[in-house]
Amino acid sequence: KINEIKALECLCLIEDENDKRSMLAIAQEQLAQILPEAKVILLQGIAEIRQKQRAAMEGYLAFLMPVILAVCGAWVGVLAMVNVRDRQQEIGIMRALGYGSGRITLLFLGKAVIIGLLGAAAGFFIGTALALNFGPGIFKV
Image: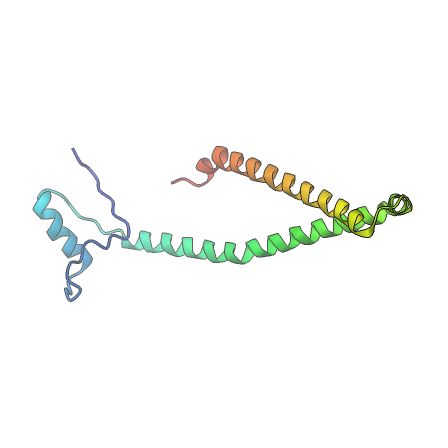
């Protein structure tokens, strides 16, 4: 026994674009042919509110994500500069041993890239695990 059918943003109701009847009347007419005892309730308002909420969240995240990435990139850069400043004696020893500036730079940049990739991977897996465990309880669907 069918007790409920939900159709959000269903565009299949209108066959003729010149038809001026309401979506509710069209849905009632089409459903009456298949299920004569069925009752049609239009929840368009809720669907529109959810769509607006999704669009607002997408706009918010489209602004926020580049800012977060820029701040994280700047933070990694600051940490790399502090690392270089704290290791000036070691850099001097490496230069005295014959290492060139390019090789020393590559060493520090390589370290920053490896730490960044490990942090990104850890953040991805921890964030995914938290989202899967706690997300359904917070965001009820």
